[in-house]
Length: 153
Image (cartoon, rainbow, N blue to C red):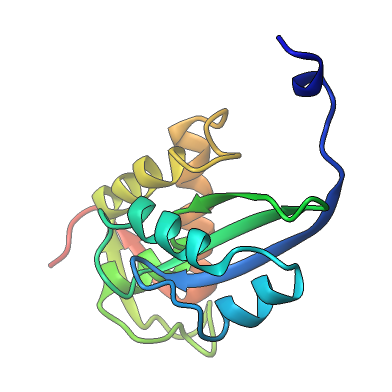
């Protein structure tokens, strides 16, 4: 290993964005955020779009960009939020305004398991068991007014 690999680059800033899959453009919100950190917009857009092409267009992807002081950067892409998956599975546009009192829709245990399998691949979730991710998803569903059932009627 070279000596330069052992030294850590000084970090200038960390940027968190939500960008539609395969649709990163130098326009807002990406352009201004990366421009302030003096990062190469086109390199980010090209790399991000290549990494997210397997997802359906307009899927909101969470991206964390680490900008270094030498104007280089690296980024990690997470899958969409659990709430987005739950709304898609339940077929609703928004969560209940009175969760715990008003149920807006329901999802099956199989939906929860499929969402957990996707979230297991996210950085930071790989060490968690599928069971614990499922429990977290059920909690999110309850807080959104979405009921988890064994079978849809």
